[in-house]
Amino acid sequence: MSISKKVETKIIKKIIKYRKDGFNDYQIKLSLIRNNYPPHTIDNLLEESLNYREKEHHIQLIISIIALIVILPLLFLSLKMTASPEYETCTNEYCFIAQSKLCRPALFETTIGDFSVLFTSESCTVTKKVTGYHGEDSELNNLIGKSLTCSYEKYLFDKEHLKSLSYSIENCHGDLRNHVV
Image 1 (tube, rainbow, N blue to C red):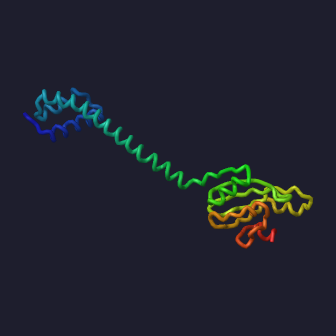
Image 2 (spheres, helix red, strand yellow; image 1 turned 120 degrees about the vertical axis):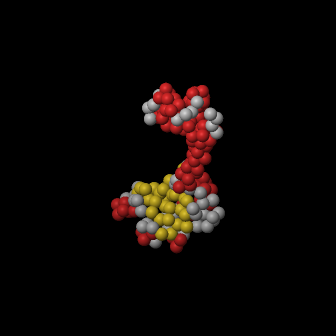
Image 3 (cartoon, rainbow, N blue to C red; image 1 turned 135 degrees about the vertical axis):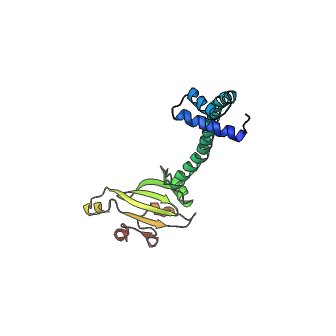
């Protein structure tokens, strides 16, 4: 009895299922012989089912690899886009000014008078945060932790921001504003 390729594929899938269900090849062969399939055809299909399963496994492996190749870069890109910007830690005012003029994220810590101030630049805004006070007026210790955020236009960052807490105060907001006016 000759069987079509479509029927062969169907039988191979049944053989694979029977194996998964715990039947051995002898049991499977007896069942197929009872359904009038010739023994030599069954032997060939049992052998092909091993290759078919291996091919199926290779196809799944290839699809998984392709999925990883596509998904990992997309995942990395989405994480990169949602992550906070990486700040350039500047050790001098020239670095901070250059980064700020380009509206790039940057950090710079310096002193203005008796105050230690952390400057943060990002998206054409500069934040001045008082991180310490080294003077004699103990009341000014209340300013530690307070900040002021000022906006500016790209390429127009003024270095005077680094010399005064109150510079360009009209373009600023924050809890430090009421204390430096």
